[in-house]
Length: 433
Image (cartoon, rainbow, N blue to C red; front, side, top):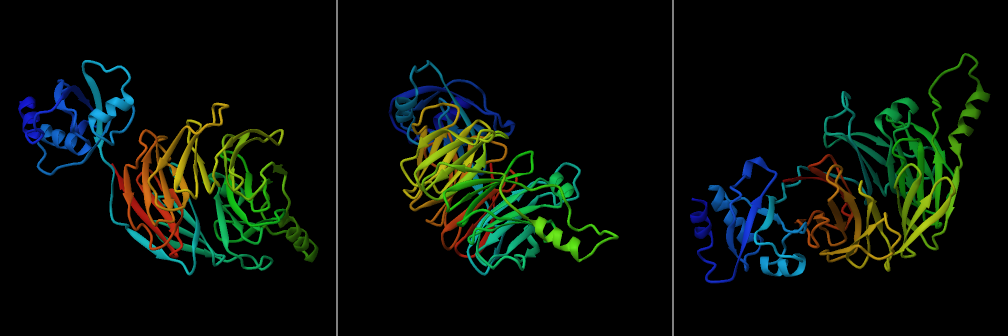
């Protein structure tokens, strides 16, 4: 029965060289017999999808993706085998899965200026927070906004002691830390200020020390350390402590209020020097290590305890953003339309892989929170692309994701992406497999 269906699906393929394959999947909805089939080598992904749809007897065709030798099929079987199969077995195993699809953006919200940063926080188990988590957005109007279930619930203006300036970056603390320390989010401004806010929008700390715009902020995974990257070529570490400024005191007086106001202004714990131009991005590799990217075309790894630059990779292009997954792999984005992959576990400085598909400056990248192979990128070409590390071409492209440049994006859970752009919009896009 299966062989007849395969022949029916390949009836238009004509006479051509074939290869014996065995289809496998982890998706129980689409399991077929693991009987070897003779498949024309000139079939591509679409042709193989037709074969599978015939085998499954599906009334409504479903697009599939295919993995052969741990590499996504993006050409014909013949070309793929020539490129990636070193020792061709009598029967090749082809893994398949339902292709990614995107729904129309469920919601979009307008800001009065460019949306420069978005950051997401997933709720803890048993939490009363929104099941979809919360999202913070930073805007060039200097305001920080909190979103829950895709609706705005809070709008925060900068404190009186800080001049209104565009927000360039955001960092968010865990829910547990936020409740204990009354600090929820940290905003980095173009005027070099960094302001920490409580979940209710109160200014809790003002971090002073940078001499240029704060381009990125990263929060340590399990401590209260804040890391910032700046136009002034430096990376600074800050300790956002556990004092609360909302408690009253029977001896409360003008003197106490002055002391509290002074305590709000804190300086850096350490400064990391090494980059020779603007530091655009930074993220924690572990509690003891950081990774950063810069306009000086380098990606640097830092040892926190010693404050030294432990290793450097030459990116050959200005670095606009970086992200790292749980496997120790680092992605960097660049103005030459490319995304580059680096292996932080090796001392080699060479590029591990380059991903090219965007038609403009690539501004942002974000690894999937669960699947370390999956990531999303945003570009000045107004598109968002979904990638897998095992494919040099994207799994999916969201055309016209924004009406202007895509400036920032983050995964919100495992099936949604939130993005911000020069069109003044934040958009929520569902991505499903």
